[in-house]
Length: 323
Image (cartoon, rainbow, N blue to C red; front, side, top):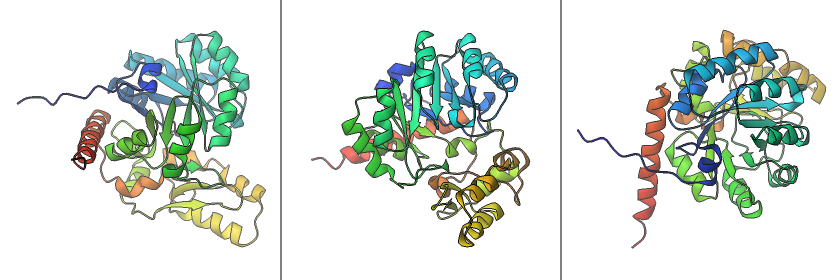
């Protein structure tokens, strides 16, 4: 039986990261550990370790483990709003990590030490305004996270089909599109809109190598198209699977709760309760809008091959429309 030949991708992102496929695994709080990250990198994409609120020692364990599982490039992600990540950065660089993602804060404090170490700085933004701002701060690439994404989202609610071409046209930086993308059709669409790669988070949650609790995976696999709900639109918007906690947030806002009330409610370890304990009462099961299109739990290798096949089918379908 003849093996199908994998197409060769050549984009600004595949060149910048030295990867085969323009597919980045999004960092998810407590759900982006070494086994998943290494599997994505070994399959030709870019795995990303998520620091979340891990201590330096906890995160070092993950970096060392990832390096033992792959000799290919992988990245780390630091959400700056959660604290100072200078020690996390120094530790990561000391182990030879050369792709650093930062989010939720100004990248100015990070770009100099990252570039001084010969590493690449990537920043996650929701819109053109912030994309220009981080570009001026010297980042090497941008992740454009549109409204369809899981977790915290921007108040503007700009969807991918509007967001990607606008930023691609007006920003001369390698661009990674994120938000609601779960398959090769989404990859084809994002590249056609001007992106150089895609970032997928929720799709990699439902893989064999992801460490999510069984209850989290089952909730995702059973989700319909309307089950990844937006909450906190007035105060602290985000997207997560329908659950008791989401209903409590809606009730809190309906009854006049303030932004502090919503933030305090969300900030009680709910992501970890979902990820590690599958707590259906108290957990926040973050998910992108593409949840309804996910119905299986393949290995990462199987998933990546499928995404490439779907991409080829989608582009061939488009080509068939031309006489």
